Length: 206
Image (cartoon, rainbow, N blue to C red; front, side, top):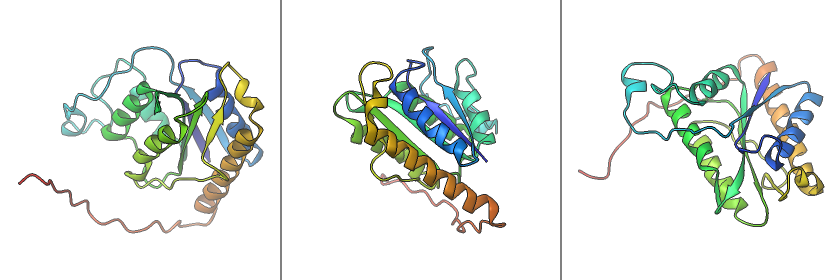
């Protein structure tokens, strides 16, 4: 069992990394492998709705000049996902949203994989950012893993979030819950996932 943790901060060892490291360490204590993937500070494309990924059946984004397709590959190999992001103006880092939208749309295999979001902020806006990140999981049949509180930690300077004792406990509880769910899924034989109806999209403009 392996959990991919996406560090959506351009700061490699900042507070988002601190929170994700707390989760990763607790996962390992539960016997679950964890990998932190750094989004980095290089440009990330937004989706241009060209549809080539699906028309050509690529299973990845047609643009291969940033981190998106690496994320697709890692998502396909992982059993669960945690996305962490700093809060910018009450929202996640725009690059996080851009890469997730492209990876999920272009063919990443995520259905039935547990997922969780983590928001890190100096003072406010964390709940809005947290909710925004969760929405993509809720649209793609990914069980959202909860904790004892919203998955939020506070800090400004790098590493300061470690002083948020409740925030770090929330991260550990999230990891424990993630490990518990993964073990339920992977050690109980057939997980008996819910039967999915065929998607029946509609448009409100006739």
